[in-house]
Amino acid sequence: MPKFRTILFLASFCLLITACSKKAPDPVAEIPPELIEKALRDFTALWDLNEDGAATCADIAVLRERQFKRLDKDGDQTLDALEYRAINFEDTSFVFYEFSTLDTDQSGSLGLAELSAVSHNLFRSTDKNGDCAITYSDAAYIVLNNRRNGIGGRERPIGDAPKKRRESGQVDPF
Image 1 (cartoon, rainbow, N blue to C red):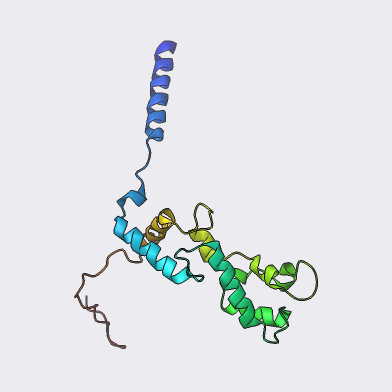
Image 2 (cartoon, rainbow, N blue to C red; image 1 turned 180 degrees about the vertical axis):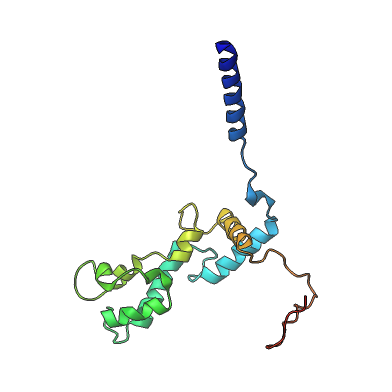
């Protein structure tokens, strides 16, 4: 009887290991390549600030430089605490960074290098492999994430008019 239990245990264990070792289907493989290429083109068009044809960390550096110039109201090449406060309204990457945290040299003002030390939330979360470039595989995850969030899952055929929205005060028919 103990041999039977041992054999039954080993057989069950082997079946469990086999079942757990099967790979789940790759959700990215189900996405049409043209959707991924479109997402990559759209993201690149939005983020390619240095116009080199790719969305990279160099573009974030250009963004930070533009933000710095726009925020430096007095033109002294530094941001004081009041000037820095305005960035929270245009870039959520800075929401959790207090002025004193970014002021690494404790000078009471921020230089461009101190402002540029903050990475961009959206870019960082999109760059899945951390190579500082948005690639085809990163764009695949953009599409996958959008589908999971119900964005662009069902596109209306070309030529079809969008559904008419109800007027205010009307009740949806059942």
